[in-house]
Amino acid sequence: MSGIAINRRFAMAASALCAAAALTGCGKQEPGAASAPPPVPARVLVVGTDAAYTPFESQNDKGEIVGFDIDVVNAVAKKAGLEIKFVNTPWEGIFNALDQGDRDLLVSAITVTDERRQTMDFSQPYFDARQLIAVRSDSPVAKFNDIKTLKVGVQNGTTGDEVVGKLLGKSSTSIKRFESTPLALKELEAGGVEAVVADNGVVVHYLANNTAGGFKTVSDAGFPVEKYGIAVKRGNSELLAKINQGLEGIRADGTYAKIYASHFGSESK
Ligand code: ARG
Image 1 (cartoon, helix red, strand yellow):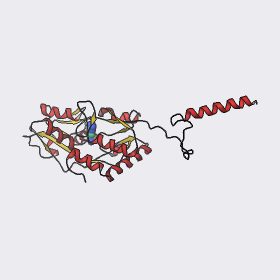
Image 2 (spheres, rainbow, N blue to C red):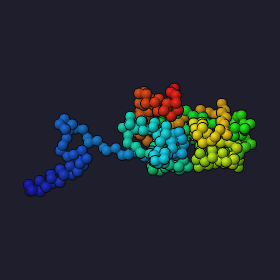
Image 3 (cartoon, rainbow, N blue to C red):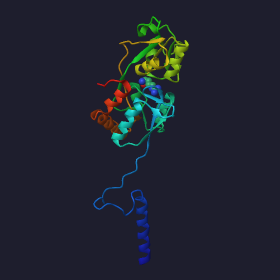
Image 4 (cartoon, rainbow, N blue to C red):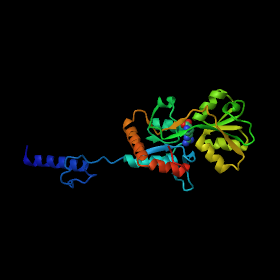
């Protein structure tokens, strides 16, 4: 082999190395950092959320996605060194979008259930909720069982849908399923349903901000406590670990409590 051929091969190999290192700047390594591999640029993770769920997630007049969940996940991402962006994702397709890889994680006031655990993985819980019944102020309804004979609105595929399905029968024609919780509550206002069962935080917020006092809430101790979790694709343990680490971090440094107080007024437990 001639010297020229060797030199050319060396030059090609060297330029390939330079191309690979282009992101950090070839040949500009700090002295002493020679053995550290160049950091892989982080991919922006896509967070799916059904932004029709005030105060957890909604779109403001500028079209930005805002809310408690958004603040929590932004803080978690910052702690864990993750780059994220939120994409409004209708509830009905949200789990499928995660499974297909169109979303990397979901935050959407999602209750961790055994059934959902079969198809996705959840972070440590970050919020406690319960179902709550909304009815007209003059309604005689005093407990969950009292809505058994009524027309009931729920958001399709939610835990509210599930509990009502258990009481009225899953295929009961008295259950009216809506694409979003606000739509179910609007139908209550319009008189098309006589009760709505949904997550307490959302029901309380809606009634306080949208109705002129014509409606009330009815709680029932029989509703189990629900825990919201951040969902990742089943088996994505690396991302899950980072999210959990971020959650721990924002609880430990007081960020979580601040976010909680800014949305719900009082300090969380
Ligand atoms: N917590 C309930 C569930 O997991 C309802 C969540 C609905 N969330 C939303 N952003 N629409 O079924």
